[in-house]
Image (cartoon, rainbow over all chains, first blue to last red):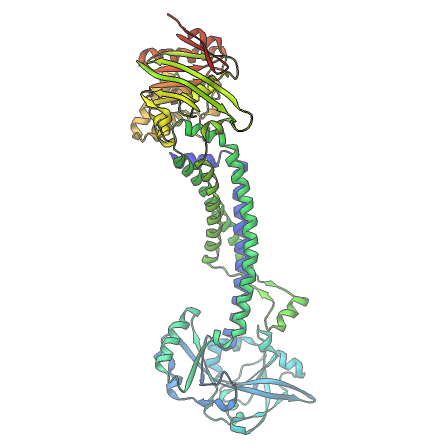
Length: 405
Length: 228
């Protein structure tokens, strides 16, 4: 009957219940939306940088990452090509040879990154073929280039034009070559968009004078959770005195730090949001406690123990909290889904500022159960803690004084 | 047999600010099965005396013994248990739980006593029938008249099979017919079940039905009239 009493008490003052449930609902809605956008934006950024190029894990010759030079290229042994057979988390091994070069056309020059890739294998992870916005994807031994749209824009290149590349090759070899542009590619990451030039792997190896050599192996995994077991296996299977194994966090510490700084800043926003929410809910609880002081006095008079009364009132607020949190989840689902499917896209100065940091100004919301549950749980816990106030009041309540209130 | 005894009971409100002596040395003895009205002008201490007897408030001086128990010696929790087992309260404003039906209101006190569901249900029906509310059992207080609500309150007070019923101005908000009806019920229960009734009242209709009338003036017993 105590449950029944608590439940009916909730509906006794419908307006008060509606206000409280609505304040909890909006709290969950705001907090969920904020977190979904924040995590979604970071997820998108990481995805665009990691999946479009870096991969979750890479293998290099030891010391390469510290000093990224073509001289630290290493032979692509068969055992390395077949890493996927030894480490179950690895879906594809993407051999690459990469270095910087000077690209030129007519009177324009620009610094670019020339990357030699294995076209089909590369496409399996980065979907590079899908990023071809103009022209066509190249074949394995085709002496042709794919140029990022940003590079093409800088150099005033069009499809079918020739791009001239000059660089220092392996062990000081003079690297020079000219390649027709077979396709233009567009990247989500502006950073990649303004510097990438792709050549088929054998063509790039020839260009750099590094036949049979690669500078990195990008490893395709299914998801982030596979990184840890994959790293563990790789450390066991590879000669770590010759090779270094790095995950995306090791390769992109600035991105990790920026995410951490942003998350820390958001904690302050969350705290302010939760404080506003808490005051709103507390106001309602305070009002309810004051309004029902007389009734509480009567209940103690007729033999209800303070602990029973406190439990009933707590239960009432908890039910209200649950109701508000559930409604909050239901209300936030379509909102988050909408922005999951139709990401927020910024333009103008903000977009330009984002691009300076190498990111697209696109903020999709992530639609994952834990976002809804975490925020609903947090707001619910705040409500449960605030519900301690009437318990404290009831514990000290004198029935006669309460009935005089 | 004496069931309620007060000796030199003093109760002072606001002792630190402007002290108000609500009870100023009340000596009173009530026998088992009495039907007693405590009367007196407003502020004479009637409600305070009932509160002290019922263990809702503690005296500042003097002794209160109810059913052989020294009220002042009990802890707050013991007092709650004592009230639950031995005392039924009827309040001026009925004070039913608004979200429960008449039947549930009556059952509620028995629930606090951990009585089995079947027993609670049967006794609630029996008591509501006894106060003439057979057809209103599933109505909430807001759906009942003042007189009907007070009858539910009486049924609730009787539910735990108390030794005493303490009623604070139980007819103050009732019309003549409801008052007469309520008094009939209480008088019958007093006679048939031997339950001791103590009322505080201003109402002449109640005073006329009481078999003993104790008059309080300025927190003291001024007169004590026992009627044949």
